[in-house]
Every structure is written in structure tokens, then in C-alpha cells.
Image (cartoon, rainbow, N blue to C red; front, side, top):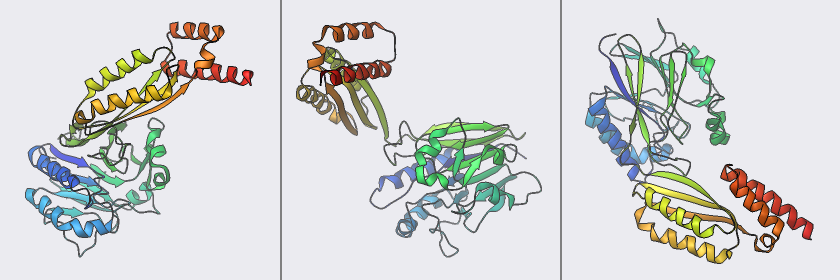
Length: 356
């Protein structure tokens, strides 16, 4: 191998006509590829479906050809598996892995492309390829099953069944596995000397896309060592989720805290989803109105802001001296707020049942 080779790795843009901003994100990624890398990897679900691909192909081709001859490597995902055929043209610099597992070599880097298949798993596909030595890079669109990241298969729900991948399928069998399919966040995990990366969707495709959006910059050194850097997608908005706990008698203090924290988070790229949970002795309507005032106060400071109240009114029970003493002792404990809330909820619920 000669000089180090760099690829930008992304996936899951889910391009569609009614969200033209997604094309802007693709254009940004392509421009970043030209500045930072020797090529671009798109690990599936470039399009929302094959119909959207038919309408958007011309615009996508125009974006891709801006960096010709830098190669753009694409595999189909479960959403756009029918978007590619020998008759479709995405640009002279685009390499499609759409006719089953296949391999190429770019500047001495051996690359295996594993297109999505609903009935096959990753190990079946990779075993069909024969290299004179192990591939440096493999590209796939599927579900990594690893106990350190259970959110991958739990969040994917029904789609978790697609293209299952386990550590023993990849460890020592390649240097870098470029994955797509999981949107929520950037995940990097090492299995021996094999680096496995989900870059996450480079834009917020749903409320599960929490936190800043990234693409992966992958560098393969002369000695085969792999270095991965997270590159923030500067133009993309993202969801921020936060929860607050409120206790009876502490409503004013909590509302002030919520106001301060929202002010600190204010950003035009942030879509804030806040949830306020707990028990209050203030009237529910009054408390909700106060929360609504905060939401309106900062509406112009965020791309989107939504504050949800999940509070309960316990005034009639709080007048009980025993309950008041319990609450005072609970507040003095150095417990997590969620644990305190659960303890209070169980205690007050039990007392409520005794009253009936």
C-alpha cells in the first residue's frame, strides 16, 4: 500500500422530494469529500424509496459529478434496494454494488460491497467473496448485534432482522466495516483490529436522531492501521431531549431552572423536546400555563421547541404530616431525581389507596 487513503463514510440520507434540504446535506457531504478525502462511501438508504430515486436521480447525479473523478461507492439499503439497475446512471465516478456481493480495488485498497438482501445475513454474503487476502474495507447495510449497544437492535424494531452482523463475522476479517441502517447516533466499536462504524444519519430523520450529526473520516495508513475521525455536519439540525423532575412545593424553583437551562441551550439548529415529570401542589392548569409561557418565550431561539408536562397534583395528600415529613427526608437524600420521584410516586399512590 502506498500513501494513506481517506474515505468519508455516511449513510441513511433517505432523500425525498418533499424535504429538499436533504439534497443540501448531500451536497455538503460531497464538497467535504473533495476537501478531506480520496472518495465517499454511502452505506445504503441514500433514497427513501425507488420512486423518490427515479425523480431525484438527475439532481443527485449532478451533485456527484462535481467531484469527478473522486469515486463514490454506494450500496443499496433496505429502503432503496430497487433504486439501482444496469440502466440507471448516477455519475461516471459512481461505483454501485447492486448486483450482489462484489469487490474492487482503489489505490491498493481492497473493498467489499455487500448490498442489502432481505433473506441473507452478512456472513453468508462476505463468504461469497474471494480475495487473495482479507479486504481492507467492507460496506454493508444491516444490524450489528452487540451487548454493548443494545439500542441498535431495540430502536430498529422490526427492521432489526435485516442483515444481522455479529462480532465473529467481522473480527480480524477486515480493517474497517462501514455500516448503515442505524440512524440515531454515531457508533464506533472495535473487534480486535477491526473497526466498525455506524455514522448515524447525517441529518435528523426522526426524533430519535438525537445530538449533533456526523460523518466518519476514515484513514487507512500504509501499515494498515485505521484511524476514524468524527466530522460534524455543520448545516444539519438535530434533536435535543431533556427531562426535568419537579417535586411538590418546589415548582417555582424548578420553573426557574428550566428557563435557565433552555436559555443556555438556545440554538437555531436545535430541535428541543423537553419533558417535565413529577408531582406538584400548584394547580395543574397554572403550572402548564407557566410552562407554555417558557415555551413561547424561546420559540424563536430554536428551530423547534416542544415542552410536555407529565405532572400529577397531590395537594390533598401533601397536607398529611407523615407525607410532609417523608418528603422532607427524601429531599435531603443524595439520590438520583428519578429514584426520588419513583419513591414519592409509590408512597403517595399507596396512601391514596388507603384513603379509599
